[in-house]
Amino acid sequence: MSRLSRLRSEVSADWRSFVRRRTAVFFTFFFPVILIVIFGALVRTDPGSSGGGGLFAEPPGYYVPGYLAVVVLFTPLSRMGSEVARHREGNRFEKLATTPLTRGEWLLAQTVVNAAIIGLASLLILGLVVALTGAEIAFSPLLVPYVLVGVVCFCGIGAMLGSYTDSQDGAIAASNAIGLPLLFLSETFVTTEQLPGWFEPLMNLSPLTYFARGVRAATFPEAGIDELAGLEPALGNLLVLTILAVGFFALGAWSIPRTD
Image 1 (cartoon, rainbow, N blue to C red):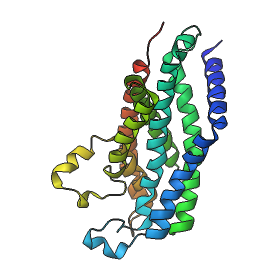
Image 2 (cartoon, rainbow, N blue to C red; image 1 turned 30 degrees about the vertical axis):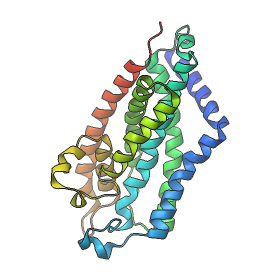
Image 3 (cartoon, rainbow, N blue to C red; image 1 turned 90 degrees about the vertical axis):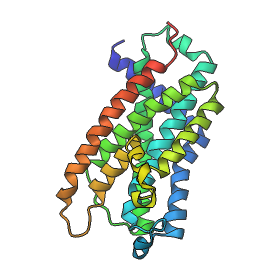
């Protein structure tokens, strides 16, 4: 089999495996919807209080990267972490070692499936944010590479979590322990002004920070400024995120247990 044929077969098998897990399908799309309903439609934002530094004090469009980050971050971390751990517990990597499929190809196939799932969830999120919160956003074509590169990055991290934790439960617990701080401390829902000055350099260590900054620059240009003004920071953050994604994906593929 050629490499393309191997990848196509693995992607098809992984997609059918995901669709058969109805609970996983439900919560992949249900969790971000609940988040938007609670914080976007019920709590709502209050731009007039931005001077007071309150939570959700920015316009609704400011929080679009945060809503997208829910699926771009948590879905790959939890799915890849538990999938690698499940393969380890079931000795499935030993079986894969008898096939031509390499560890990198296996991880790439998993990433493709995650990208398709998260792409659909992102479309749902964007539609709900506009419909329920009245957010004014620009539908930039850069959203597509940002979501894809973000998925690659966090699939690599998820693969490492699944490789080094001792069980599926441990992988899910680790993904939550890492994902929750990143979600709220990466310029998504909490602005830099609301955090201590000494913490700001630490935010630059999070891949999600570059995702949030770039998506915000591409979709939420400041009032009175031409949309092209957001192109340079959007491309710059995408470049940094891409470099991080390549590194984490390579580390994730290298971390998958070697059984050959």
